[in-house]
Length: 288
Length: 306
Figure 1: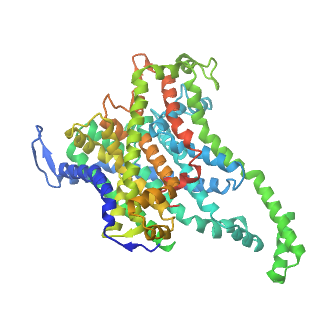
Figure 2 (figure 1 turned 180 degrees about the vertical axis):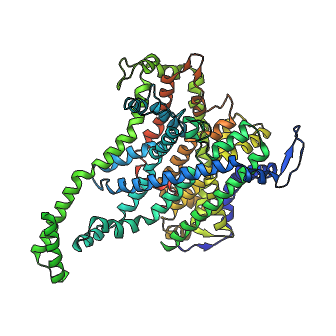
Figure 3 (figure 1 turned 90 degrees about the vertical axis):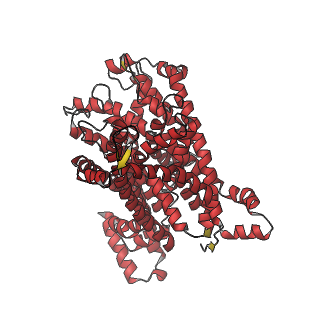
């Protein structure tokens, strides 16, 4: 759509600017402030330069949390994206099945995140949970509170349970927008199921898949509540992702300097990812 | 095997005769084959979504199941159905102020937040969808970064910011803090919906002598009412599901249900039944309205970009 150039539009944006500025810029400035200062208590601060950044960037604690989080994000992407596409391809296109599928599949997306944690906490417990009991009955040593592998599997399966529907719904939205004529042409040419997917459905889902990948990557990169409720970051620190580590440092131990420096590094990573997201989005909008 | 030969036969027909001059029999043949294929596909394709839905519902079912059991039954035995269904767990929540006030607190700040977010996002989204202005793209991007910002980064600064204003443990503090990610979300979703409304409508209204506020309220808002509904729903949802910031900013008076739930450990151990019942009650608001937004869920989660 052609837009007219009008700087008075700034007045319409002003409330948003003030409100988000208040809740984003001021806190960020506080963080920047702490990240370059040190204190011996009593609210007396002195300049510490970039030493906190050096400390955080060189600490194995940060590296481990970062690597853990990246492995987690890539794992859930590798599972959720193909699974989501597969389910979306097999969803009904018309009839009573459509609303039923949409409503039931969207249900996990709307559950409060700590309740998602609670659900899996009770579901997986060996003494009272359906999953834990069943696995124990099958002779599998499964206890997410003591076994790191079990904790990881639980957190990954929980995320797949929680968010695969988002991929499904996005892909489904892309699929229903394909006109019937495309499929008819493919039928006439005798295209195989795979070629229909590769040359018709996948190109049409390209845009929604990109959104799905970016959203899932970013949201899993800042995951906090669900693993916090289920494992609390443990056993040990095997499921301590970046956000959990940061909250431990900032609110648990009140290590303001390192926590602030870590916040800034974390935020810069997110900023870079947001920029990729935005560029992809606006490029698509322009082509539309 | 049969369909294979049919297929190759049809390909020969298609190649030898041009598409426009195809014999009706070949067309019928193609149609019949298509229907047969549809039938074959339909026979098995329902299995995939069904299995997936079972996988989704199983943990929820277990929670609901637990919420109707007594603690003795939860810990003592293992049964797929409650043997002596009881409403005790729900009664505890509805009679104990520390439980039900959690729901009231949550609802108060969520409603406050939704109202603020949609109200300020409406004019901004209109500006982004209709006008170009100095720095518009940078501003739009900056909004996005706030939606993507990890709440963990903001938890401690929020704590200090709101305590310096004396707002700790108030509903408005949580409502304002949640604006950080909900206002950008609302702006993006509403912008997506508004861009679908043709610009000619605005121009016609201005020619007819409408002033901007009157046009906006009388004509434009009714046109995008579904968009407003979807934006409000998502603001409600994201404020409702958030735990970290809400927990950090409250202590007793405005404590949300999410935070109450994380501390159900009492002297006699964990009260599993009540915890399960509380969980079930938090799912209900989403489950109630999900039907109305079913066609917009993908759009809302993707920031209005599908």
